[in-house]
Image (cartoon, rainbow, N blue to C red):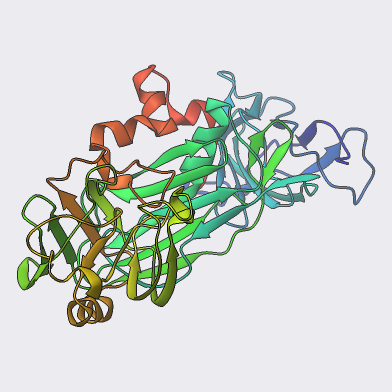
Length: 406
């Protein structure tokens, strides 16, 4: 439970300068001594972060400037009255934070005063936490960043606040954006694939910030990705061949077989989700009745997963006679054991596997793995709350008055 109401910083300002210089700006600022008062709270109690911060001048002095920052260096936006008698914040403070307020004043003779005041805000009752993915490590150029929220967020203003606080920095720098997959999930990707050998730092500045609906941001663990070589595997389903590229140069051409009629392999860009040296594949896992003509139950080696529903690139020694000539699989990309082992050893999480020329549908963006790259950049940007704010004429600052300075 938050305690306290309006936080009022009352300044009993001095009336004379500390010096006799004819130029008041050259004098040492006088001490604009004041006192901090918390309405409905006694000494030692913390301020309610949902209430505005107010600074008031007394006598003939006027306020010329106010800055309020928390320990993380985040500024509180505010408005100063035209006559300098008061200043008030235009958004909520962070919860569980220590603030430093620096007030500049001027007396009727032009002498400059200064006052610095510190105070703490109460911790939040309800926290919104962010879990970033993937975990820190080395990934391919197609790896998206994910952010899973601990509670659903629908309000556009709250979404803007969250996006502004979720930071993704890469070296070299690239253009990128968050996309709201649903009320609890965001994905981040660059406009193009990550540059080979880039580093990507992901962190949240949401801690303590008011999100809305009684929620305040909680702490989150940052992640750091190292991007490896640019590995792209492009399968031409109509030509029954896969070409594997490293940093733009073809390093291997592999005869393959893909999905036969009725089980056509999905077109589009997929991202490697995992690698399994052995997996048991059963037709029942994709809805094929046991004992039917299409039923199968096979031990499969050197399997590289590209969808959660069970599409792999794997060894298929039983179909070597068809590889390079016709499509006979149930949707996976099959190749010889030798080629599958080479592919398994060459490919990494986050590398790109693209299929063209198939009769199948295009890989969906979010419900079966990482199909993020199958959306155009314009479509991707439309899933950003900040881009939406720009389209309707508002500014992200309108929904997020507390600007993180990260």
